[in-house]
Length: 361
Ligand code: SF4
Image 1 (cartoon, helix red, strand yellow):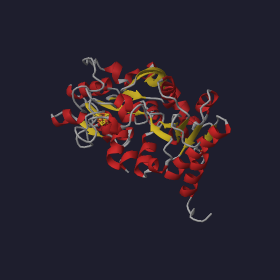
Image 2: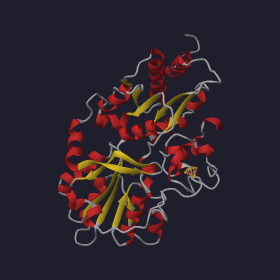
Image 3: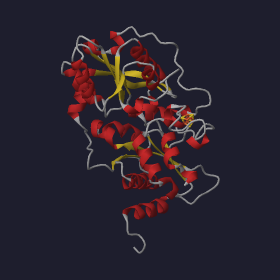
Image 4: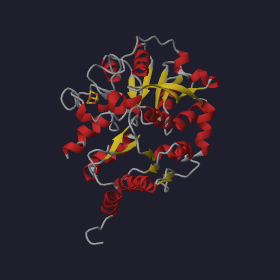
């Protein structure tokens, strides 16, 4: 077709052809994703600017750093201040806890270091046996849990432990459905599905939600929107796999077994959202020697998840966009993050500041 030389242009034409004509009395068609990398792809490539006005693609709680509750940041800060070496991913360093960040206490002399993987943390612990206690701050979704499980299954050094703050994506989708927002379809994160497969999403399709497991290139996101709109158009709701080059129905069963062996599913707090049933992982008692929560007597004050004026609670639930927060771009920038969603490159506010949201492009 003349003028339609790229798959991206073809996808945009399909999106427009599948959308109903705009009607001021109708609410927009609303598709939600739960992945910081998808938000980065969408903002960086200006995908929202290409969509019809009556189609919203919103960001849910998909940034692992953003949803880590202040209480757990306060706990690792308390450990660092007591003389324990705390190791964490770089994105976590500047995320504000109730009164400070890990970067703040490091500046005051605490031994807080960034690592690229849990294996780096184990190596540092091995070098300090008999001298220092080492705690790895284990955050993230189903994607990072297997490597932490593998470490605990392989007799890490006795001075090593994990403060586990893993979260699970499907229960967060349940929470979004239970919230105020009316959702028409889900873009599911492809990297999570490489571990859990597509089956855990079947129940959402049975509830009537079209769902597409999606990769991370702009064309992946555009075609997932096409696939969801096609399901809506046809009156279907099934799980489709746009990311078949990396994901199959069963996922990585070996990784799933390792997660099951080391962790048990538990209720968990999500920053700005609150407690979600069965949405976290806790270290099983068999591995209790490596559980920093059991190993150390960690006293913290009542946590403050969000400070006054920060709208992360609404943003993580897709009830607001960053430009609707009064502090966005003024008080709160990536250089001066006031709330958790502004710190990480996966944070919605960070990406809207860096690349612009729909209204600014
Ligand atoms: Fe919170 Fe800053 Fe985002 Fe506002 S702009 S919601 S203060 S992180």
